Length: 466
Image (cartoon, rainbow, N blue to C red; front, top):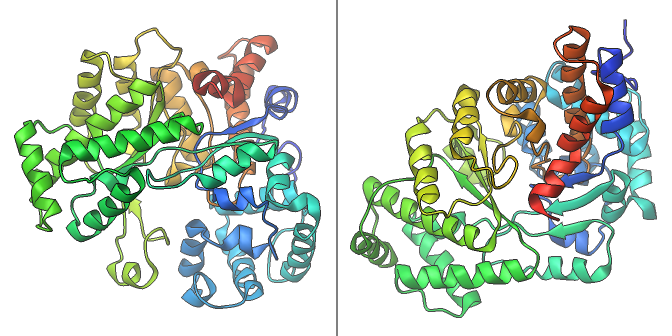
C-alpha cells in the first residue's frame, strides 16, 4: 500500500516516477491564465494569516462548505478568519475523492511543509504554522511565486483597467513577469442596457472617445487594445456561453447599438447579432497584433438568483451548460480563416460532452504556420481535476497531437494554487508511464522526457513568446 501524498503521489510506475522527477518537476511555470490581483503583486502583499490567500474568493471551497452544512457567514460572511479556517478544516474530511482534498494537501505541503491531514484535530496547529510562515519576508506574494518557480503570470483585465499595477511590477524588477490579458466581455454585454451604458460611459472616459455609435465603440476598443499591447499584453480572453456567428448587416448593428444606447431592451435575435458582430471585430484586432486568443465557453452562470442578489457573481453558483455549439464555432473560426485573420486560438469547453467535438474542431483550422496554432485548453473549472485532465489528454492524444499541447494554467484567484501545475504534471507523467509499462509506447526516455518538458513549459514558452 502506498503512503498518501508521498514523493510518488499519483505516479504508479517506475517510468512515471522517472518522467516526473527527472523532467517535469524542474520546469518553470508559465501561468498564462489566472485571476490573481495585480495590485497585490505590485505591493508585494503580506497576508495576515492563511485564511486570506486560501479561502477569500475561493468559490470551489465555498461550494463544498455549503454542501457540508456550513453557514454562509463562514464562507463569504463576517466570521473571523480563524472561524472560517476552522469550518474549512471541518469540511475537509468530507471531501474525500473530491479534488479539493488533493489540492488542499498539495498546497499545505508545497508551501508550508505540512504533511498532516487537515481536520478539526489538526486545524489549530496547521493554522498557526502556516499563518506564522506567511508573516515572514519570504512568504510575501512575490516570494510565493518565486517559491513555485513561476516565470510568468497573466492576469485577467478589463479594457477600462489602467494597468498601473502591471506597469509598476515591470519597473520593480520582480523576478516573476506579470502581463495583462485583454477581457472585453462587458463591451458586448447588451442584454442589460443599464449596466451596459454605465460601462460604455467608463470606456468613453478612459479612451477619450464619445461612444455614440458602433463605429465609435470599435475606435475606443482599438485605442485600449493598443494601450494593452504597449504594456505587454499578448493574450485575449473571451468568456462566452456559446460561440456567436449570426449574420447581420452594418445597418442592423448600428440600429441595435442605437437602441441599447437609448436604454431600450434588445430582443434575443438582436443580442445574438450584436455579440456576433462584436466578437468578430475583437478577433480581427487580436490577429492584427499577433496575440493569442482564448475562448472559455459553456458556463451556466448565476443560477441562484436569491444568493446572486445577496452575494454577487463569482461566489459559487455557476454550473455546466449544455448548449449545442459546434456549428457556430465552426462558422466563427471559418470566417476568420477565410479572411486570413485567424490568430493563435485556445478553446476551453466546460461540458465534457464536447471533448471529442473540440478535439476534432481544432484540427480543421491548423495551417502549418505555428505548431499547435489552434489549441484545446486544459481541463477547465469543473473539469480541472484528475478525471477531467486525463479525459482531455486522452481525447487530444487520440484526435490530435498531445505533444504540441501548451499545458496547464491555474485559472485561480489564490497565490497558493500553483501546486495545481504539479498535479497536472504528475497526471501527465502517469498517463505516459502506464502506456510504456503496457508496451503501448516505446521505453525511449529521451523522447518521452522531451515531450514532458515541452508540455510542462516549452510549448507555452514558444507559443506565447514571453
